[in-house]
Image 1 (spheres, helix red, strand yellow):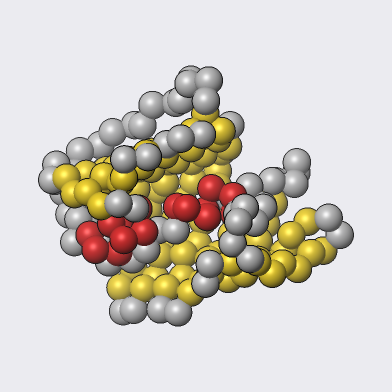
Image 2: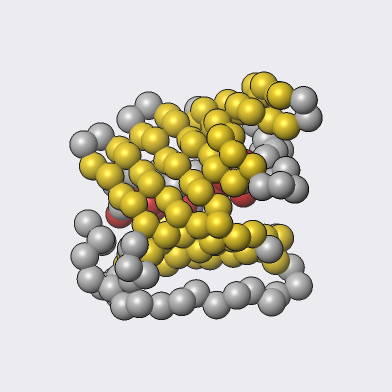
Length: 167
């Protein structure tokens, strides 16, 4: 596992004009008999993504970048791995799938465009969403209505996100 060593890095704030969102928060993952808890920093641009998974002490566990060419993961030990997509890459290297392809829509409270989905609402706010084999529950929201806490479940894995800041 890549959860051992790593240097402490504060990921930079994005000032790129094509940035769709730049969020930070916490992530907890339970998969099989294993788990991971730490901090998350995600810069989502129109054509690319950068995700930092950090230990609770701020050490880089993994830096994931994705663009039209594919995905690359650099561990805290400096080793780099690549694959056509983030999902297969994280499953192979970290042991669990990070569903980045749909997550960019789910974290803002929307279904991903394209694949079929089923959703339930409370008023105008989405409470649950099922899409691409994932069941998503929206647990808490910011005052502006944006999701603050969401839980993703799929057979054998549970991922909980708590968003602290979103720009």
